[in-house]
Amino acid sequence: MGKTKLKPMEDVNSEVVDEVEKAEEVEEQRNDREQEEEQKEEEAPKSFEELGLDSRLIRALTKKGIEKPTLIQQSAIPYILEGKDVVARAKTGSGKTLAYLLPLLQKLFSADSVSKKKLAPSAFILVPSRELCQQVYTEVSSLIELCRVQLKAVQLTSSMSASDMRNALAGLPEILVSTPACIPKCFAAGVLEPTAVSESLSILVLDEADLLLSYGYEDNLRSVTSIIPRRCQCLLMSATTSSDVEKLKKLILHNPIVLTLTEDNDKEEAVPSNVQQFWISCSAQDKLLHILALLKLEVVQKKILIFINTIDMGFRLKLFLEKFGIKSAILNGELPQNSRLHILEQFNAGLFDYLIATDDNSQTKKQKEEAKGEANKENKKNNKHSKPKLDAEFGVVRGIDFKKVHTVINFDMPQSVTGYIHRIGRTGRAYSSGSSVSLISPDEMEGFEDIKSFLASDKNKDIDIITPFPLLTENAVESLRYRAEDVAKSVTKIAVRESRAQDLRNEIINSEKLKAHFEANPRDLDLLRHDKPLSKTAPAPHLKDIPEYLVDAKTQEASKMVKLARAAMGNTRRSGGGGGRNNKNKKRSRKGSDPLKTFNPNGSKRGAVGQKDGKDSSSTKKQKTV
Ligand SMILES: Nc1ncnc2c1ncn2[C@@H]1O[C@H](COP(=O)(O)OP(=O)(O)OP(=O)(O)O)[C@@H](O)[C@H]1O
Image (cartoon, rainbow, N blue to C red; front, side, top):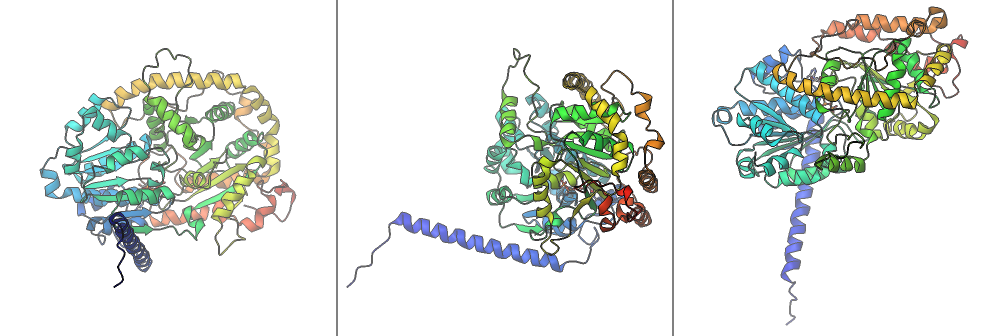
């Protein structure tokens, strides 16, 4: 009789584990496919009522001017209300925050959660940056206030002292908005008990999930996940896809519903279709001249967000624009947290039109880790002359909801396609429209081509999604060259260095004032202005006002149209922030009056300054008048 050879027990065990994992993976893939198919079928738009939302939330939304759900809200809300784990990927500005906040609040409305005060919050919302923390906290707090329910939300960040954290948690909040780094800090300081969290936590949200790992939060997340109870519902929201999202999904979620509202093979969908993208070709030295032409000749719509890759360049640009009477504010990771939040609030409230932002793109992962390490070191007293530290939890681009930004300008190009998508996504949010203009120097051309080919759809390979900017003629640019070059020379490295140091000193002082002020008047925005001139001398009148004879007729016309469009959009006066209650008619008139929308790229390509050969459009009669 043949003897059956028995396998060693460990082999059998590992085979069984492999089989189970395989089966789970197959099940998961089937689930993913089913959900994606179901999602395609459900194309008929639904109202918030039909999604099953509580009437208090619907009333709150109406007060905010929000009437119909966006696609991701239509897809995600019912699943989240059902208690399912959800992974949601939808483009920038598509309304992901409300997609999870609304059902999360509704679940916490239930008498059970409200009446039984627990020793730790029932919901954790973890985001990658302090700016986002503030933004989500503001949104959730305003919903709670408008709904008039007895719920409490708090935000905690790593920079808070243990006693501040303890005070914040003392009122037994139901919702905690924080960064992943802060949670282990709370455990270590004894302000949160892991066992209490295990008992209380019923919903965990990881917002901007694609960034959490790249911001170096992996270890923090692991220590949080180790205490998440199995029954806890987990939600993962992101705008772009990455292996990090997959990793998080495996680490935290159980058989989730996957909602993908951007298709991998439809890349242009990654950027909202209501953002028109343009580019201008110029040398690196001529970027100052071109941005001056764009702003001074008013051929782009305000409010404008300008992205720069280095802090020094940001100050150089601010000083340069100042000489021409253009006031702007600066935002970067070197500024104190309170100042940053205040700058964002003022910009959102419409107190100034131009914001120069150095985004996190200029920091590599390594730099971020270094910044984090630095931030953790204590006792820097004898380190007086060290460079100012960048905040490891600073993130200005990802997820920040800049209100009513009509134009994004890439003064410097971002270093990745994802960076580009996130920057451009700061305009055209939800149902609004916007445009972007990228200044491309020869050195940046290769990266730009990569972005273009990534965004090109497989179906329409030959159609450029990013077209040459049509409203600026070479003549108009040249008319400003002499002045621009003269002024650019006067903005020396020393002037930049001094202004940067001065600005930082001022902001540190302001930050203290702001801290106290915000505690007493959280909504007061007018204490300090962030667009004050850096230079002590006032701009020379001949630079402030560009004489009309210098500007060619075509550019004058374009500028007039941009102003008219702005007026039609009710955007001539500094707006008071808040959500737009625009009716449909208003929206229709917007599109019709936006000169960039009525422009036909093919007809005007020859004259645009984005054209590589830089031929002047005004010299050709075929140029379409825009
Ligand atoms: N249903 C809606 N109708 C109109 N506006 C909405 C709606 N939902 C959200 N908004 C508004 O759209 C803007 C963008 O929303 P949100 O910040 O949630 O986008 P997001 O998808 O998280 O973007 P990002 O990926 O850049 O973080 C916000 O100002 C929000 O108030």
